[in-house]
Length: 350
Length: 270
Image 1 (cartoon, chains in turn yellow, red):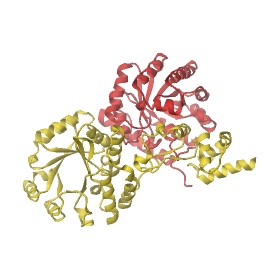
Image 2 (cartoon, chains in turn red, green; image 1 turned 90 degrees about the vertical axis):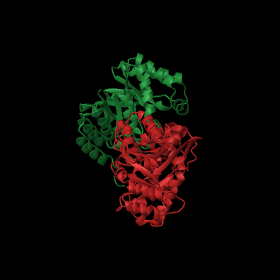
Image 3 (tube, rainbow over the protein chains, first blue to last red; image 1 turned 135 degrees about the horizontal axis):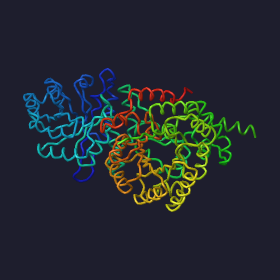
Image 4 (cartoon, each protein chain N blue to C red; image 1 turned 180 degrees about the vertical axis):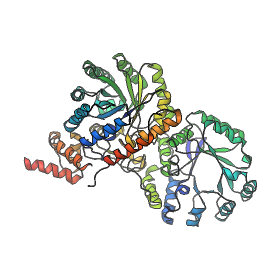
């Protein structure tokens, strides 16, 4: 289901995670692959981009999903036919092969040409490429160093002149990919290519989960997307690729909603909105109060309450120093048992 | 245009749950940051008392090349704690959105303005350079932000930090907001403080620079609350590419320093 931002504004999302996982890393687990694909579909992905290596590993494609095959040779066009894939991507160098494009079209396969664009000026030059009229869509890949909103107007003009859908696939060489993809959606570009976690070679691409969450949060639009399955998607991704996800990775990091510092704990206690960009449940996570070097007395009182000890804030204040010292000594937050031990030692002194 | 980096690894970075640095480690990190030519190190929060205060005072004795600043909530006690440590700069965080003012502090905008005046005056009377942080500026009423900046500016504050506290801005938005403030307050230097909740902290910082901000808050490895802050090396890489800014910074050396600092920050095995 495309992202729907209004009656006439739908954005098609293509995910290229699978073609980015190096074959040596891909564990080829069929069930996990199917679950991962299904979650991607559930959170807003319309087409899943795969390549011949994926087809070799998973010859029987999971049903109910739409695939896009990356064709690196003429043989790949036949693979599309064999596997009943209706869409293919042709890298720029294959665009010269008129015969191949004709062949794909004769089988009813929709073709997308992938064209590299680095700078703003490159967008205007795209129309000069040969055989462009033959393909159905055009994907602009790269765009790393474009920092001027004029790019949107140029892409729209190109789309109008060629009468074709233009897909945007920003790369992340200068940490701008998510911003570009979000900018595309906000300004009426109706097709983007991303990858889960932004995973990919050369610093990767726009991160699917960041783009979707940003669209939801910034536009405050009811996109009918359920992002609460993202933690599951993260687990499957790790299982399929062996790649562990940092705890503070935006949107999917396990501990992004942990809080501790006195001022934050105080604010979140009164209203989580004070220090959270959105409710953690939106992305399937939970907030958690941790206790450590930066805790304040009220947060400690609250933690003790969670652990079944009702005490006055003054009493919590008495053990705060020990809690902080212990946290510095261990160079981490304290476990519940450790907090209880410190509290009990205070009782012992009394 | 010269861009100055304000490193907040030792304040916002350390604030990330799971990180607890010892005094000696914080001092070592400050020395490394200074060796990179970082303009300002936001070294901590003296109001935490005890060890944090002792560390800040000790840091000042080293006479590092970087300016050292202390972070303060908008209250007299915090500022007095900071003054005990004698930092170069006293930074006061002003809650500026109604969510912060009403929900967290249960106060109103008039109270904020009055308190801010008192706090700035206290630090300035003792001869400190004061910078103001607009906490949660991205969710604040623009007119109220103008009021705060206007008051601070009249009191002689020269630099304002625009904080996207919960990381919800996007680059066009940042550009427009910074440009507007810069137009209204030409003489004020602007500092951008971004968070990476939606994965756009670096893009947003670059957009702010494009709009006229000349100070950028970063942390090593992008560590910080929730999904972190603007990553120092990533920002430098982007800034060099887009505008040839920060050309004087040696990226190889910065990478070495980053690795040493991140090794130090990594929690010990429990």
